[in-house]
Image (cartoon, rainbow, N blue to C red):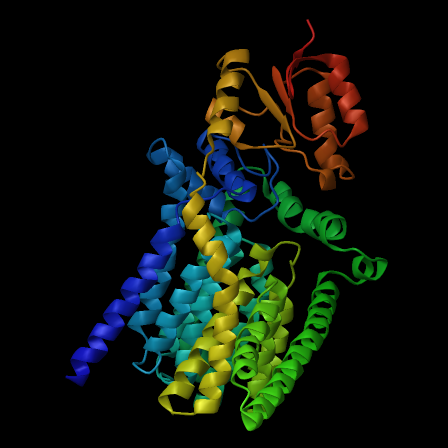
Length: 523
C-alpha cells in the first residue's frame, strides 16, 4: 500500500511538472530569441557567422537553429519545442540517477521551474535557457554523487562535461561556473580515492571526448577563414566593448573588469536586500508580540486582524521584486549553512553566486542562479519534512511561499494573454517589405527587429545586420553600416531607433522615406 501511494505521488508530481511546463511554454516573444532564429536562417543560407554577419554570442544556438531551417520551414513553436525537449532530457538524466530520497526534491524543483519559466524566459530559445537548465542538472548530479552515489564518478563527470559543452558554446559566461563544479567533483573523487593516478585514469576518456567536441567549432571557423572573426566577436568584443558599454556603470567597474563588477554588485544586493529581509523579520516578530497581548486580553477582533497582517505582510513585502526574492532564497540558505557550520558549502555558494550574477541587467540573465536556489530550497524543505523538523519545515515553507507568490501572477498572466511568438504586426511589416522590394534585393535593419530578414526572405545588405545604441562607439560594427548606407547597398532600410545622428543624416541623404520607418534609395 505504501509503495502504491509513493508511486501515485511521484506519478502525479511528474504530471504536474509537465503540465506547468506545457501551460506556458509556447507563448511570448523576446528579441534575443529572434536573434537566434535569424542567425540560424542566415547560416542555412550559406553565410558564415562572425565572418559574414556579426553576433556576439557563442555559436551553438545558431547552428541548432540552422538545422530547423534545413529540415523545413519552421514556425515559432519549433524553437520552443527544442528548449522543452532539452529540459525533459536533462530531467530524464537526473531522474535516472536519482536516489529515492532526492526524487521529491527534484519534482518540487521542476514545479518551481515550470512556474517561473515565463518570468525568467526559460521557455524561450535563449543561450541563458540552455545554461540555466544545464547548470541545474549539473548541480543536482554533483549533489547526488556527493551524498548518495559516490561510485558513479564516471557518469557524473560525463554529464557535467556534456552540460558544460552545451552551456559554454551557448554563452561564454557559463565557462567559469562549470570550472568550479568540475574542480569540486575532482576534489571529492580525490578525497575518496586518495590517488591522482586513479583519478586521471577514470577521467581521461571523458575529457578526451570533451576536448574533441570542443574543438569542432574552432576547427570549422578555421577552415572557413573566420577564426579571427569568431574570437573577436565572442571574446574581444564582449570583454572590451559589451561589458564596459552595456553593463559597467562606474570607472572602477570598467577598470577592474567583469569579476569585480559581478562580486561587487552581488555583495551590494545581498547587503541591501538583507536589511529589508531582517527588518521584515523584526516586524513579523513584533506583530507576533501584539498577537500574544491580544490573546491575553481576549480581544478576538484585534487578534483576527493581527493574524491576517502577521501571515500576509511579510510574504507580500518580500515577494514584491525579483531581486528581493533572489536575496530571500540566498539568505535562507546562507543562514541554514551558518547554523549547521557548513563553512565550505557557504564559501562555494558565495563563489558560484558571484559568478552566476555576472549579467544582472535583466531578470532572465539571473535564471541560472534562481534555479540553483530552487533546488537547494526544495532539497532542504523535503529533508526537513522527512525528518519531522517542524521549525525548519515552517522556515522553508515560508521561503517557498515567497517564491510562489512572486512567480505565480506572471505565470497566470502569461497563460491568460498567450502572446504569439511571431506577432501579427511583425508579419504585416514583413509583407510591406515584400511589397516595397523585389526577391534578391537586400534589406538593412537599424535597431528594431531581426526577424524581418527571415520573414520577408530578404538577405542583409552587410555584416552589421542590426544596430543598437551600445554598438555606436564600436567602429568595427558601425563603419560597415555607414558604408552600406553611403553606397546604397540596401534596397530597403528599416529605421526603428534614430539614436545615431550621423547615421540618420547619411540615411536621409541617400534614401527617401516611403512609409513610417521604411526608406528606399534615391534614384
